[in-house]
Image (cartoon, rainbow, N blue to C red; front, top):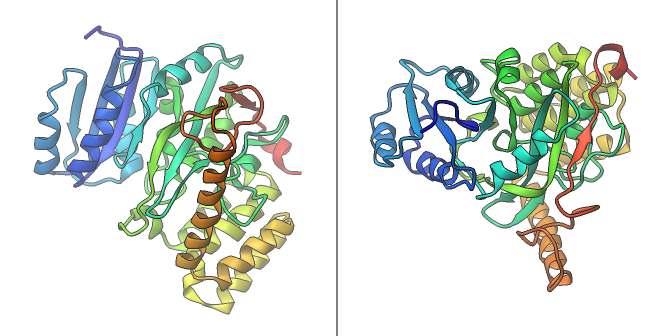
Length: 351
């Protein structure tokens, strides 16, 4: 293997040997073969070590941490071990399509900004349906934070970024590390902070390149984060986001965690926070109300039925026509064309 690969791949994991093996094999099967795969095992885990050793690929390196530190810390450790100019992130329960790195490298090398962050659409696979996210690409001049958080319907995913879609310069990932201790919205937090750097821009590949396995019946650390901690995080990044994005995060993301309390005091606290320090829109209010009134399992079934059905209808309507390789939602504009998102910082976002 050459001393300097084209891409380093960082995969944090713990106690999920079957899943991480699947993820690593999808990375090693890329059409870009000159890669380094760094799996960071977040604490002593003999089963995972044995499963990875059985892969037997010299491009794979396993780093075992002496104690658990969480996925953000494991990612930061993996980035420090990266030898390539570019680093791509992969969660242990996701998979890449074979051309993922090739498409992103082409976009990254043609980017106009010095430090591009390249993401992509993905295929969201739930136990009941599958559909493509994000459902739309950014509009010209749209702030990154608003694209990633504001809804244009009752379901999340209009604008979206997920960890396993991200490819960025290794130097940027070292300059702006993941926030250790943050249990949810790690990719949103990192993207907002990275985008505040003057040399950074966000590019999104129009075609889905990642399989995001959303087994909502499997325990997930990211879904157990207390809403209070998430509100503290949001208050900390408030200078980097617009009032519209601030309100959207409270009335959607944080409310999803707080709604199981069924507390009118919490309901009113979050609504007041969004109105006082943000700028809610009509969809924010509708989202807020339905999150507090409808149990999450019911919301998920409705979402999957509507979005999964829409995906099937789109695929039927386009049979025999050129489209996304997955039969997902139609891609606006020319096939495969990326969208660049301008970054705004400081006073630019306080509008």
